[in-house]
Length: 219
Ligand code: SAH
Image 1 (cartoon, helix red, strand yellow):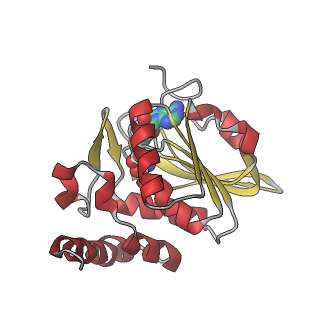
Image 2 (cartoon, protein in one colour):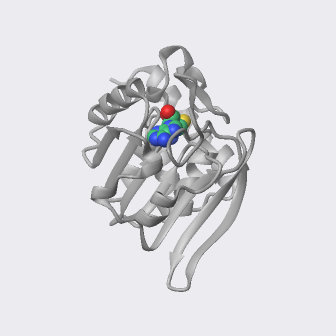
């Protein structure tokens, strides 16, 4: 039998979708269905599980955070995934965003610079049977060249500019979503590679932890 705790989490998740995502313009049904299904509370420490479906970011250790549900939904929707794509994620963190992506595309490659987060997220991918996720510890500002080009790239930490290596590894007709700007606040940019060249637009103002690496901020 499922515990009452489990039922509470299911309710919180439904409420999260109805109150935080739909009213703010998340319309992609696959994204909404996936976020209603994936247990977000397993990605945070036990003491924070009761807050996992709140309308905010939460700490995940090492000074890093799991993004607010709305931002996860917005970034995922911006990639317009249909199911056949190869996606590169930079900044695995707790692995929640990765797990959402894994439901919506064919294969996810994800890079995290901190070993402790890499190890914890890897365990969660196995527990949740995300067999289409490959992860590694590295400086993600340089991408993951061997497996490129990628149909979609998502960066969940912010640097001063869009790393050139990531633009290079984005496939023709591909889409990248990335926060860019000063350390305090940034613009969430959507970049598309089209026949006419590269097009970028800003879809939201955000606050992310720093992207630290060769093509990001220094240490
Ligand atoms: N999507 C994650 C967000 C975690 S915060 C989640 O839902 O939990 C951003 C993450 O980016 C942190 O874990 C941080 O360590 C990582 N990061 C920062 N710079 C990086 C880099 N150059 N390469 C890979 N990961 C990086």
